[in-house]
Length: 248
Ligand code: ATP
Image (cartoon, rainbow, N blue to C red):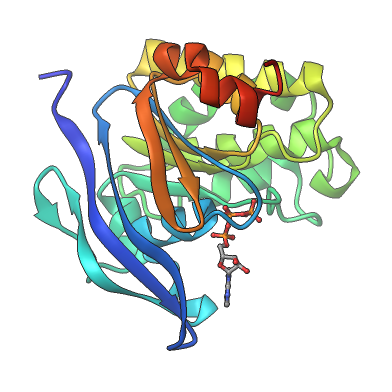
């Protein structure tokens, strides 16, 4: 059913370096086929939340000390990031992280590393990525380091798509991009969601754009969810307008 939660995060607590309590009981759910936004300012805990979901905290000396993460009802905290990719959960990290010395196409192909369905199938996905991101097609033989910030962000998302994910975790896709490019990136995310049924969980400081494209939003402050709801309701909420949209 289209509305079953794909991901459930239940009351998680995250501690860095054994002492720094950063998430103080965060809960939210991501229904299949929807776009969910985690909002809030710098340091609110958005990145930490995404890392907790894809089990990327260990490298940062962080750990989930309470609560649970469930994919379709099954607990996944013990899985490696690679296991999660094989189950359809792929993260696009903040700051884009393309391999600068590789071409755009080589970068995209690295995203297919967990696939075992053969070259032709991978090529088919590559063609699809180029359909969604025509800019990447024109830049396919360019070294990533010499492409624009927007193209690198698109490359990072495209690379995630090469794994044929069900859920993409997008950390701050707007970061460092001009407004027009941010709009372009978000509108492609929306098309991927609508045409491919890909589910997205995105962390964004840019509340205004995120609430225009997302279905649901959760606002984090200091490691806690302080507000949640349908994106349209949050957009109309007076507190959200005053504190996060700057439109009061
Ligand atoms: P940003 O927009 O900066 O990514 P955020 O909402 O994603 O903000 P986090 O990056 O999750 O916030 O950080 C939440 C808190 O955890 C901050 O106070 C940050 O300083 C702290 N923190 C993040 N990573 C670590 C780490 N590896 N060790 C210790 N503290 C950390």
